[in-house]
Length: 206
Image (cartoon, rainbow, N blue to C red; front, side, top):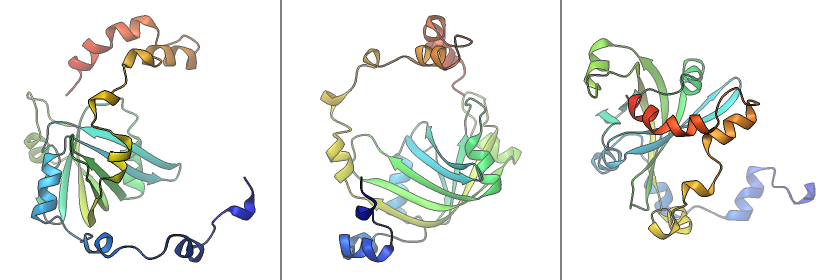
């Protein structure tokens, strides 16, 4: 790749791509309106992007549709369910509150994007309000909304993401136990890790 062919300025980008279409600008607002609220409440999954001194992070988040709660037009609430305790996203948030959320709804081509600033709450009543099977999250991410807009369906259509014929058999790819065993020189992972994984996931889901 020649450096002479690299695009290195906003001016060069503007020449290359031209002006954005009107609809792409009209769809952006600074709050969650009723239409966008419906998309948030239908989504069982979103990706959370954060930034910190060590760099960027993008974390998958999922639960039953409506698990991301729209408290009001400028605030969304996200329970932080059980995970691996790396807490990369949370460590980033306490140092740099900027976040970006990308929501996906199975069967729907459009995605929804929310940008804003986040803080982490451990208010007991708030935590209790997100309890599932009697288990409350350890914290709740409170996002102060700054920008909201939907993304058109082109990416999902190109990927054929919801096409059942495009599903990949898990057994065709390296297992998590195989990957861990190689990376850790056998300290963790292996066949027993894979064998125990389904039960472990169910036991620690919340």
